[in-house]
Length: 313
Image (tube, rainbow, N blue to C red):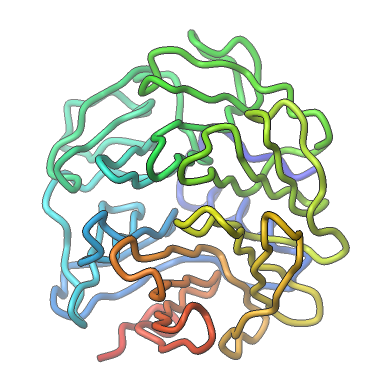
């Protein structure tokens, strides 16, 4: 079983765990550094998520050294502390994250659960400071219901497992997670239906419609590595790898799976996906080998904005 640990001691251990996670894919590298055009001071290490801002104007990338922003063809560093953002979720009204504080921060380490209502300029601690570092954190875009996978007990979670909160982490309920036997490696929450959650494990892609109490398999056979609900709530997009990288869209009503376009990815796969709330045809994709792409036609074609960690004009 590949376990998602609750704390990563340093960048070396993080890379080792990421490589273990994708070893079956034959991937030889994970996210390391994304240089940035427009601001030479930006380096993105250990990219931990991908999301558009709620107004759709900016693509936000959390990493080991703060948030970076891609907008209008240029990269820049986001305002605010350069925390090591691990779990990361953007909702219509706020950003939620976890991880470790910047060296000059007065926040406790690990961060527990934190929230920003001003694009990451400032952060409000919501609990579990000094106790928890959630590497898997997801939220409904409109419901703002939070789900986390917790690797070890803390003062609000009596045992490891999948938990959810409807009130910004003030109270947590543990999900039974019947039907999955391995620790999740990816997590996604329906934008409006707070009871619908998807998890990826080494055995495939699973869906729950009862707040994580029971899961049913959606895709098995090939290794699934990422999952994201579309913002209209009608489909679940997921990246997988068999003999090559694939990107698919699953209709949540009919269960029909449609293959989408994917760039040529050599020994690589889709690590993160994000949809633009203001332009629903626009999607962003990040790969394990630190390529970034944008699609303006709902995944039919993709344009690279970074290759092998190097930004493109």
